Length: 429
Image (cartoon, rainbow, N blue to C red; front, top):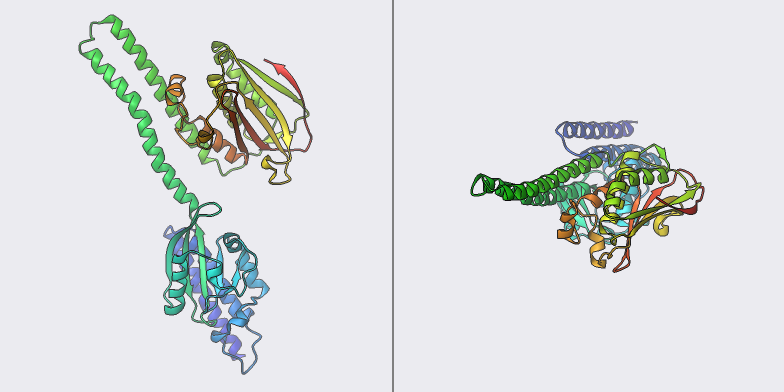
């Protein structure tokens, strides 16, 4: 009875300390890593009593339980660990894995971890060194490291040793990839945006100085310079509008749309708004009518903006007096990755095509294949970046295909809201 009470008292003290630490760090603005650490400590504390309570008189004391006993955690403790969003791994004093939650198994890429040495699971030297140092000295360590395959991820790691449980070592990871990428995107964005705004501002400032100086009384030069200034001011206005639009889209990117809409109606609305531009360029737009095309879940205004960008690009870069064609269909999944139904809309132009090495970069902010032509046609370099972020919010996908001299096809895949299939009939607008 006394042994049970001692174990309960130890467990409660650890749980209270862990929760106090988690609360203090949360109030001080620390990220979710520390909250996960607090929950992990609570789970370890519970395991000390519920998992090892079955020891009989004469067994090792509760604070010196052998590694073999730790290899089978009780169901309750495993359940707590499995629910933690951050990867957690428990190691014995020799560095062999006793347990890893689902998030950790996804990081290391295997389900079979128990009794394997940590060096066979986490192959990053800096974290292996931290685990070895903590196991030897008992001093906790925190560090940052990256995993480059299959996709680069950045992690914060925290390693601590519990002086009970035979020297149990706890490893907790926190994925900071989004923060790292956002930091890099901000740096790139500031550099690119300042460059894009600097050029038209310099042009406008230069013409203003000229008009104030020797061209003050030159009516012909004044009209010419004012026309150029109007073009440059319009370019800055479009750039600022696209920047604001991109910011609004990114703010809601994590929220999935709930509305059910018809994709064909969206495309027709987008095309109607571009009819004057198509007429000026002597371009024709053909939209295929898809009977019984499944609806999709989406934000109507954002999808209209998406297709306006794609169709406008097709008009700008298509062959003179050419045709832009939009077709629809369904597929089990873009790339066959899962069994979900997807609806697609393909925008095809008959222009010069896109070099193969440029295709992977098309959705980067401010990237242009032909900078001079893009600026002449009023492009800001943000249109396809907006398309990408709208699709991210809609859990969709963009596929780009192009053959030099034969045109390009931009296909948008969106999750279907039903499972009916289309039949296509072409209609010319």
